[in-house]
Image 1 (cartoon, rainbow, N blue to C red):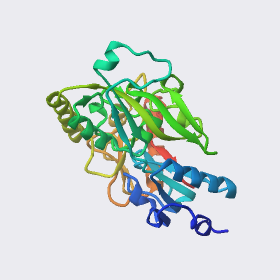
Image 2 (image 1 turned 45 degrees about the vertical axis):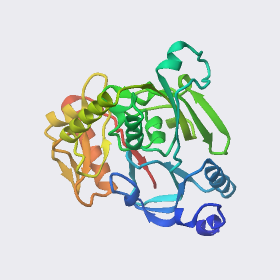
Image 3 (image 1 turned 90 degrees about the vertical axis):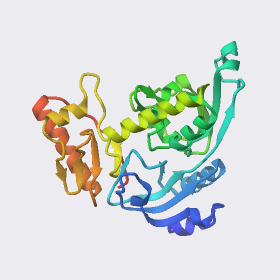
Image 4 (image 1 turned 60 degrees about the horizontal axis):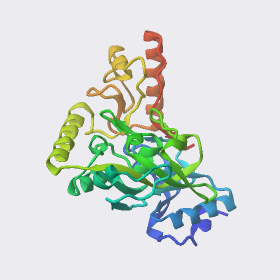
Length: 317
């Protein structure tokens, strides 16, 4: 039975279910083939319903958030692609029980607990935190992703990572079973977490932030935004930093020293502003990007005897 027939009875608004939908419209790279079936998920119950259908009919499921750290194949994505749009922001100034923690005076005076849906964007969350005078997320505000995606890859900027503000995460596995992970169980590392090893879908998370002052929060937000615009190619479609930093060297610096700044294959190009970024300079294909990545890796190894790792996640056939 065709996927359109199988999904027609889902209790999800029909305008949130698309067939043969171009993934160019759902990634910050503006690259990608067709998703066989794309569904925007707004509630945990909808996620559970789709997963049940997928299991019963052996349909592959792909999860994305804001599409900001992925490269979708030119051949597209088979099965069901779920865009996590679960939005929720619940601010609790008083202590809410967190496993393995104890109430103390600091909890009731300065710490703010926020329960945030996986589909909430970091940019929106930072605006709300500014309005409510909550500090702790300013460094992450410019990351063009959702809470779920940011936790999955332990996104970070300017010395702060998601691991620094996450208390616990509520998720479900692909069989629809709910599980909560405490901070210590999340296996956070450099641009990684347990969610890159285990098949769980993030639904929401509790963040630990602090009470702050409006003027100081705004000053930090403005500072980081100016720096980002000056140093990063925000005017072009990209998937953010294409390569991971290493503990022994700065990858972007090696790429620049190799003379690869501005080097392009098709419309995929190493940014002239920041050599750690690959930009879509028009109509780049996923094949252009992958060929460029392979070329850069080869050049860096031949010139410096260094192996570099890709930060972007490849998705699709």
